[in-house]
Image (cartoon, rainbow, N blue to C red):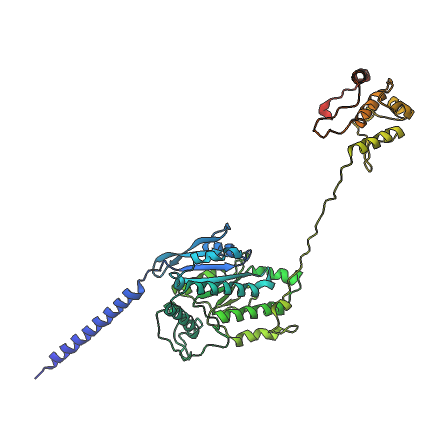
Amino acid sequence: MTSSAEVMSGENKTEDSSKKNLWSSILNDVQTHGNQKLPSCKQVVVLGDNESGKTTLVAKLQGVEDPKKGSGLEYAYIDVRDDYRDDHTRLSVWVLDGDPGHTDLLKFALNNESFQHTLVILTVTMTAPWGILEQLQHWASVLADHLDKLKLDFDSRQARRQHIIKMWQEYVEPGDELDPSSPMKRSSRNLGDPDDNDIDDSLPLPEATLTNNLGLDIVVVVTKTDYMQVLEKEHDYKDEHLDFMQQWIRRFCLQYGAALFYTSAKEDKNCDLLYKYLTHRIYSLPFRTPALVVEKDAVFIPAGWDNMKKIAILHENMHTCKPDDYYRDIIVQQVTRKTVTRETEILAEEEQNFLTRQQQTLLAGGSLAPPGMRITESPRTSGIGKVNSRSPVTQGIQGSPKKLDGPKVVNSPGGEGVLANFFNSLLNKKPAAAGGNVSKLNVSEPEKAAMRSDAAAELDRLARGTKTSGVDFNTSDC
């Protein structure tokens, strides 16, 4: 007969063994799941037009203050740290140039091996709101065409599509996963495991959701939202225009299962939140921020939260437009008129005509200054070299034209003969011959000698006049 002590001893052994099994299962679970290192194969591919803020956005995620823009296909990385696991890794970032000629470079960033480890960011800018929807559709098309060229295995691509569907079906607003009344108890923190096939396929997707399922995690980022103030002040944008844009962007995000961020690197809006969301989606790190739709320049719509009913709330503020209106008809591109200043073309006057006109001016006693130019005296040169009606030079110029007819000119004490000979020598210069020889002045050797002697005599006279007048012509003061 078994004693009560033996029964108690057997129960204690059973209880101890169950406790050991419980602890061993907990330790095995922690060893299997809790101590996993952050994977180093994850990457982000950033697509968008030029000047859409791609480089600045990546620099903000890196914590770099001075971004440097490259060309073609740029590579960068973001340091990611998990304080809970005391682990860190590097998240690779590929930035594709917006030039259509560089589209083929996408194959180096997104290929068969990296497909299941890639998150795609599509960037558009608020500085060009009229092109937002068109650019999103363009880059989504580029991405879809590239995936078709990769010839991915059907099973692997289908598994990724099911993972995106599961993310939408099991999304739970942060804070609601512990609510007993919530129809979905599963936390959105566990969406990072694509191999978890425990999903309820009977749950229907919301209307117009994932109609274009590429099997990739996508985040749409609208940059430079601080420019909204300029749109309102200078381009007469109203709240209904901003709501019209937002509802079209959110409808696009529904089709591709994408999250939406409105960011401003200048005012540091949603940049840190974007970093946390990326680490949540890629590494399943905790994320506790709900959707943000109050501030028009800092909107955040997580993937799985939105639907057409929530988007319809924006329709209530539209009075001059309808939600289904063509995007470009409502958000019209601004015409920027730049004032083009053209320099007046100046035609050079033919040399002989110019000299003839100057000779006629001298004969008429006028000024050699160009039309419109006034010759004024400065205090430094006042009274020095001043030509007036009583000057010998002026009197010689106003003399009879017969003195200037021909190369021979009678010299006078005032020096007008030297000036006359100079202009006559230029007027009588012949053009160069066809063979390229330089033409010579039509002046005989005795005449040239007379001209040189006249010039020397005139210079000597001017030098003596300077000494007698007591004026010092210092070239450094001119």
